[in-house]
Length: 53
Ligand SMILES: [Zn+2]
Image 1: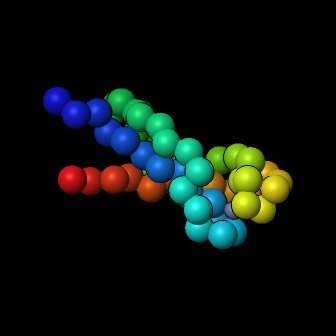
Image 2: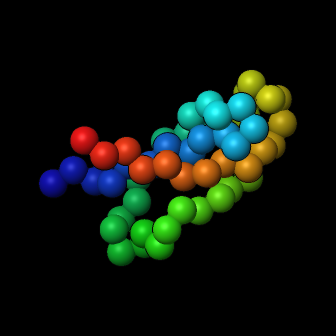
């Protein structure tokens, strides 16, 4: 079984900067996290984006 994979996409420039896996039990909609964006060179809001094959 493949685990659920999420990208954390920068809400400012749209880059997918981080990837993370989550258990389905913990999935409660999209989360927003403050993460460092190399393109913006600062911490920005990142939205979790689920990838589905
Ligand atoms: Zn960015």
